[in-house]
Length: 74
Image (cartoon, rainbow, N blue to C red; front, top):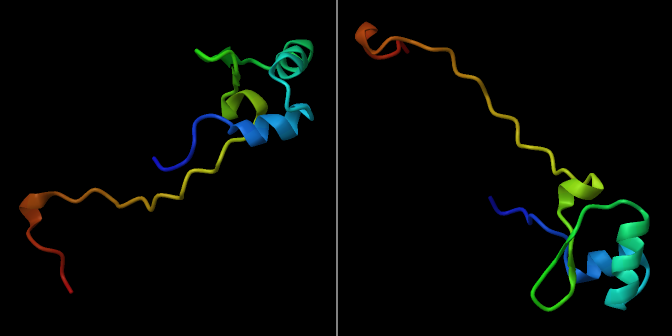
């Protein structure tokens, strides 16, 4: 899983339109966006909390075939 779980500080700054952590927290609370506060007092927002879900890559379904039938023809 190479995608990020949380928004970066720059993404949170763009979302809240302020670089100040107190105002970022105020914005998140007022708008009902779920967030956590890290050990340094900065907000941590999960991507799922703001609706940024990256689409999962399509997985090709392979039909089941018994191993007792031997190797595939062709």
